[in-house]
Image (cartoon, rainbow, N blue to C red; front, side, top):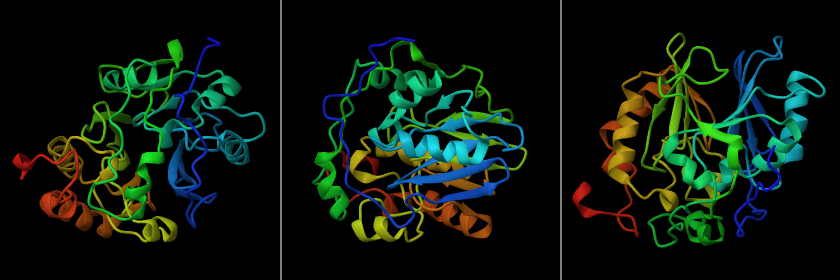
Length: 285
């Protein structure tokens, strides 16, 4: 393993949390969602098999909590076969270097996300001027510099398969980031959506704190391409998922998911795209 793995110089503990922090939900027997402060990570794999994958890697300085949670579900000294990323924003890779060093496992992400994971390119700075609440106003404190995972990270297979996640395929769902992906299993129509859409209004402090469930587009302060984000939501809605785990908010299933996602896809411009902000191109309307 390389020893020069590093976070961006702006990486730091973020003092934000929710009532769901530290709580795990078994969404399906082999899908476990765990909230780290304000973001979800997912364990994919049945506890009886000891074979599993970690999707996303939480907030900065959360590695110990993640390791403890993993060992509670899969047993002492257990480790995933890999860490698979929906994208590389700080709240999805915040503990990844400590986890990679502890477990010595590979990391997979879309090829368009690799520059942000190998120290080559920074994400656009978050936009505090965007229409939204207090979290949006706080967003300048969020890290945006690239981390460097060196050769520990590699591109997801071009054939759409997901290493060690049998039955799942990755779907390119850009907009929130260029290489954002979601994961879908045809057999039971289970969807891991990342931040392509979320089930809480992530811009509003009160709703983040209380985790009030409400389908929403990707977090506004960190989404630079709204036309692509709209296409991604429509792509996911067309899959007719039966259950969805998103990067923020509670899992959603059944009729509530179906109707909410249909409405978001149909009324994306009104529901998701901010009226103003640095990333708003009036032509997308």
